[in-house]
Image (cartoon, rainbow, N blue to C red):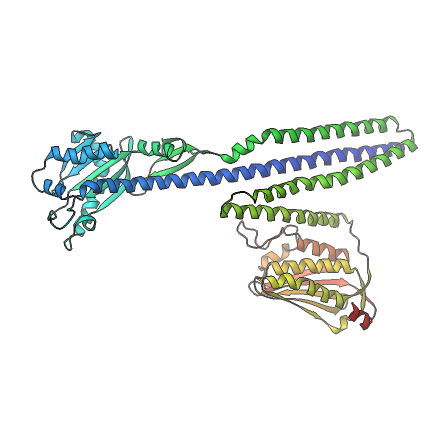
Length: 550
C-alpha cells in the first residue's frame, strides 16, 4: 500500500514539473513570438514604404527626362536648324553637350525630319553611330511609336506642348539598362512653321544614376542592379520593366529593419528574464527532486508517506495558484505596453493596428476562461445542481440583459414564453442561463440586421428553448460540425465575424451535462434556429406578488 502511495505522489510531482516547464515554455515562447511578430510587422511596413519611395523615384526620374528634353526640343532655333542641312556642331552643343553637362544624361540621339539618325553623343562627345548600335536598336521601336503619334497630331496647326510628343521607358542595351526619354522637335510658337515631319530627340541616363539617387536621396542601403529572376530573399526591391512590360532587371537593397534593431536592442533584457525564469525552474525542479527522493527513502512508513503527500498537495495547490497569476501577467504586460504605445506619435494606420492589438489581447483573456470551462466540461467536473426555477422570469431577464448590446448594432430582442411554462421547474437555472446566453451572443454576432427571438415551450420531456434569428444563416453542410470545438461559420482569413468558436461548444456541454440535447436548423440568408431540450419537472406555481416585486 505504501509503495502505491509513494508511486502516486511521485507521478503527481513529476506531472507538476512537466506542467511547469510547459507553462513557462508557452509563456516565454508567446512573449518572444509576439515581440518578433511586432518587429517583423514594423519591418514589413518599412520595406513596403521603401519600395513605394523607390518606385516614385523611378517615375520622377522619367518625368525629369521629359522636362530636360523639352527644354531644347520645344525651341524655334532647333526647328530652324533642323529644317535644312543639319549643323552637327550646333546640334552637339545644344543637345549632346547640353543634356550631358547640365542634365547628367549619358547618351543622346538626334533624328532629322526625314527620320534619319544624324547624331549620336555620349558623355558630351559625338561618337560613331556604330558604337551606339545596341542602344539604337533598343530605342528604335520607341522612335517609331513617337513618330506615329506625332503624325497623328497634324490635324490642325499646333505649337509648343500642344504639338510635342513625349515618351519615357526603361530599355536594355546589351548589358546596360537605361532610363530613356523621347521628344519631338517643334516650334515654341506659331512664328516659326512646323516641319513637315518632326525631328526626334532621344536622351537617356544609365541605371547607375538611379542607384546613386536611391542611396543618396532616399538613404536606401547598398542598392544594386540584379537579374530579373534573381531571388530577393529578405532584401527590398523593385522590378524594372521594359516598354512591353517584360522585366529587364531588379534593383535590390538591404532593408532598414527598424523592428529587428529594436528587438536586438532588447535582447539583453529578454535574455535576463529568461535566465531568471530558468533559474526558478531549476530551483523548483531541485526542490521537487528532493521531495521525490525523500518519499522513495521512506516508502515503508505509511504515515510519513501520507504526511508528505499532503504537504506536496498543499505545495501543488499554491504553485498552481501562482502559475495561474503568472500566466496572465505577461499578457497584461503586453496590453499595458500597447496602452503606453498609444501615447506615442503614431499615424492613423499604426494607431488602428495598435487598437487591434489591444482588442485582441483583451479577447484572449476572455477566451482563456471559456477554454478552461470547455476543459472542465470534458473532464466531467461540472455537475448540474437542480433547484426550483421560475423559467418565465429567467427568459424575461435574459431578454432584458441582451437588448442593450443588440440595440447598439440595430437589432431587437424579443421574448416569447408559452403560458404553460408559468410556474416553478426543477432544473439547473445557472446552466440554462449560461447556455442560452452563449446562443444569444452567437445570434447577435451573426445577425447584421433584423431581430432575435428567445422562446420557451413545454414538451413531453420537459422544456424546450429556442433562439431564432434573422441572420446570415448556415450552409447545410456546416450544420453537422457546428457544435464542435473552435468551429467558425466562416473560417477563412477574411471572415467578418468574431469569436473563437467555443460559445456553441459550451452551450452544448452545459445542456448535455443536464441530460438534454441541442440542435440547429438554418436556411442560408434567412436565419437560424437553435433548439435546446432540457429534462425538467414542474414543482409548483409562482406567487405573482413575488414576481412583481422582483
